[in-house]
Length: 73
Length: 464
Image (tube, rainbow over all chains, first blue to last red; front, side, top):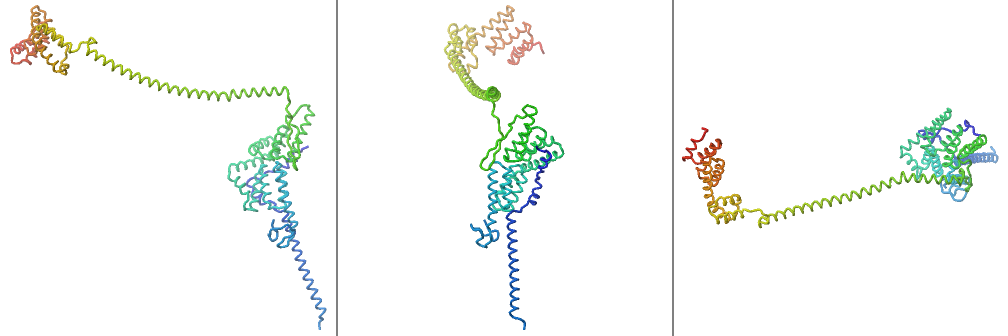
């Protein structure tokens, strides 16, 4: 059973020719490739950050070991 | 396909051979985009336009730079009457890839025809107005407006659907079905359209069950069949009943055929035949006129020749005497004959000579002229004397009329004799014609001055 009022709500005014520019501007351009690239970038950034942190930790350990092997006279 | 990181052409491996980036997932995303593009293309080929829109939009969700998918989506929108959406897709496509993009041609084709662009704009505005009427409850106005819209833009699916919905709502199920079938002919797989048709059929059945009468003349159901992955839906048409109706239809067909031939074909053929006849008539008339003119010319020439012949014949007859007309030569010969018979018969000679004119004598041969002069000189003198004698005898008998005639003849033969002129004047006077007498007296005075007759004439003249 069709409800006329409900069905009517499914119809929307058409965009007029003057509105083409706005329609193009408001067009949702995000796609799966963008999301994937963003994820890959995030992943790469995380890896870089982890690498930098690891290097900092290693350097700290090295410095600590050096201090232990050469006690202050 | 190129690496998203370094732009190098990718190989079959799941990593970039140039930068080592992991491209396995990226390749799958591109493949999905292409898959949906192919799906959309297949649906568009079987006129499942709404299905094609879904697939193509899905394709673009995977890869927004899929130029073919975006251009095809624009085309499908255009076919559905959604010109603005089509233009939007083509503009985006052109901006993403401006080199060798067919979207450029599509946009150009629309922009090159301002009338069509204006029609599209008017159609959109009217559609929106119709929708506004629907919201306000003015369904009749909305139906009128939508009919106008669909007469200009015959592919506007949403227009057909809205009009169908309005017809369903107003209980006009036949028109609703017709409208929805038109929508189906543009977009075969539109679920909204199919849903409305199903609803219309249900309502018709309900009504028929209640009333027990047939409500709609249109076929009730649609048939659907599988064609590969596609579902084709089309209305079922009942077979026409055979028998009496066939005979009636044949009879109607015959009547229509005869009417067409009578009112359309026959007049044209008659007109053609008349035209041919007119042309032939004109041609024959021209030939006839030419022949008549030629005949008249021949008749005229013949008549001229006949006249010439008649003239020549007449001249010949005159010369030979066959015509009975006497010539100057005849008169001269008769005068000469009369002179030979009796040289004193001057009257007969002069009568014959009188028939010969002075002009003819002047132009005649010398022999003719000499004979004429000789005869006239002799005969004239004798004749003049004879006329004078006759006149005198008449005077004696108091017959002045005869005397006048005789003296006149004598005077004409010899104009040197003043006595004759004087006596002629006397006769006129005696006859009572004093005016003529005076005129002759005056002539005597003028012609013979210094003579006795002149002096006497002056005495006789009554006017002094």
